[in-house]
Length: 194
Image 1 (cartoon, rainbow, N blue to C red):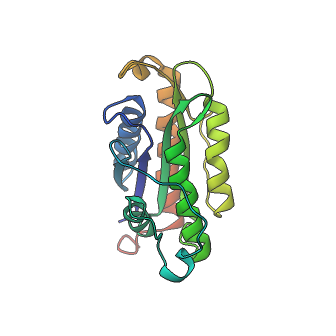
Image 2: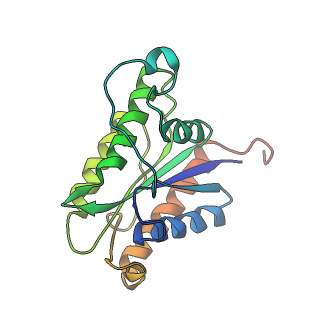
């Protein structure tokens, strides 16, 4: 069965970003695709040190949770990343994760190539489009496929649960999630179903 990995970059285990990604997970599973949500909440993430060791080790030399994410990604056909907006950009530790995953992929077997997905940004008032653009660079530089939706993948909300008041934002991410799942299934047809 095809699989999509969802990564929540929020430090809050039940915050708005996590809640939005839970909704994405439900939509993806409704399309017959397995989905798993991985949260960075409570995890200490280091930045890439540009040592180049990933080329020979086939993983990152730093001792944190990034190699676990990489292993999950290797067996997934899709990858959705959600970030809260901090000071107008995506969270720093999330960007460190993406940079390190990209380094390992680029220096080894290019396992990110042709995975389907894209970013989602959640914020109280502004900075969502800048955050999406920042995260999009990861997808574009790693030969990944990004489906569209009915608007940009942004949702408004500050206090946990407030995102559900943004009906257009929720509709947008639902459609995006559906498109990710459909495209994953088109690119990777189930050999049992054929």
